[in-house]
Length: 324
Image 1 (cartoon, rainbow, N blue to C red):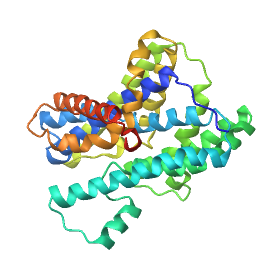
Image 2: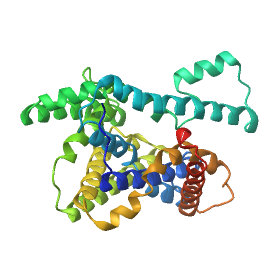
Image 3: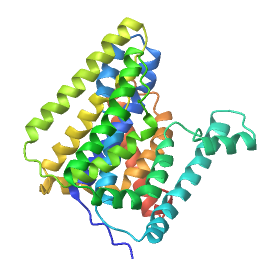
């Protein structure tokens, strides 16, 4: 029988920080693509986005830290995890499909809608659920792989993953080079997933170092994006990609930073919001669409985040947890 997963406050707090970062990224996205790189509005949006790129990698790292740290009966694991996430994927895909047709006035046939669902194209943020389904399918086998490896083998695996799935594709994107051995298909997200398991088992005690590394990597992302965007005359987003060395450094720094505060009483209060995180992720684009009257990007992100939390908490109160 699958064991119950205990709450780990620093992991839950990471998820809350990550979902706010997701909201920030989606709030500033339109500004980054529609404004000139020389405008102050673009500079502001670039700064907020650059500070937030850790969000998706640490989501996968947090999930890996939890799911890969325990052994599971495969069928029980699938029953619990897949039967939870697949109905959520179907419900929210249908909801956003209706939103696009009824509210945004798009015309879509039944066949087109079905193909968009299987292609993961119903709405821009739902891709995350498709990746989660795949990782859930692979988790029991990944668990057996990582517990069988010794320390040297694990280091070699992560070195290969970083080189082939993160560094080489990023060099291709920035410099236009082509490597025959650069494969995103190796699985950037599965690498983050397994990395979370290993980082979870390490004791970190130098928070100021990790804060410095976070600020350093964020500043580099911001500067390089701003400089190359100015040269190009439009957004150059290669350094925003989640599978890039700087975002990798940023995500590991954030994970280690929160891990270094493991056991701190203050984390318990923020961690209480963790059960609402998935719902906020699924809902916030609808909320964002309704707050276009707020011009300040930071203020808008805060409003979207808080309002989404309130709505999802209301869903929980009404007994609708299964859809959020």
